Length: 272
Image (cartoon, rainbow, N blue to C red):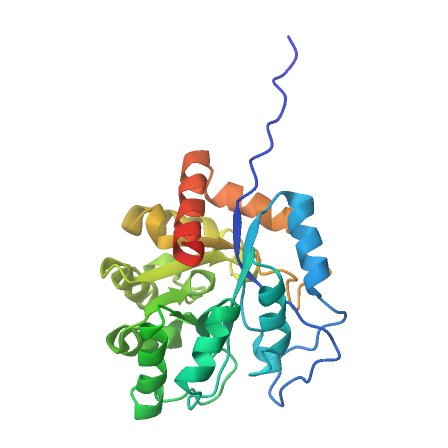
C-alpha cells in the first residue's frame, strides 16, 4: 500500500507583519540595518499571490524613521493592505485622520535598539495614544522582553488597543517562564491586547517559538493571536524564505482549525 500523500497546510489568509522599502528611501541616523536590496510593494504582493495569501498588514520599518510615505502610498493603492506608521508625538489629529482614510490602522512604537525610549506617561505621548484610540487605531509595540513589559501598562491606560510584536521577545534563558512573558500573558486578560506570533526565526534558542505559542494558546486562545511573516526578513534576507515562515506557522500551530481561527482574528482586527 502506498503512503498517503503529504497534504500541504492551507496558506493563511492574512499576513499581519511585513515591511516594504527601497534603498532610495532616507535611512534614519540610528538605523540598525541597511537592507542589501529593495523590498518593494510589487515584490511583496507578488510573494503573497505566489503563496495564496490574500491580505496583509505592513509594519512601519524603523530603519526609515517617520518616513511613512512609501507605505501609505502602497496601502492607498492596494485596498487588500493596511499599515502602521511611526510618527512624532506631536502629530495632529487632522493628519492622523487623513492617514486613516488611506489605510493606516495604528502607530508603531519600535523601541528595540533605542537607547532611551520616550516616557509614555508624558502628556505628549498620552495625547498621541488618546488620538490613536479615538480613531480606533492600535499601538504596535516592539522591544526586547525584559524592557518591553514596562510599556504595556501605560499604553493600555491611555486607551488604544495593543499589539505586541514577535512573541514579546522574552529573555532566551527563561522563555515562557520569564517575568516579562508573564506580563504579556496578563495583558491578554484585559481583552485589549494581542500578540503576533511572528518572526520565530529571530528567537533563541531554536524551538522557543513552539513553546511560546503553546503557552499563548493555552492562556488566551486564538482570539488573542495574530500571525505575521516579517517579510523580507531584515538581517536574515539570505537565510529565510516565505515558505520557511509558512512552515514555521504550521509547525507552531499544527491544528488547522486553530490556524483558521487566528486568520479570523486578523480579519476582524484589521479589516472589519
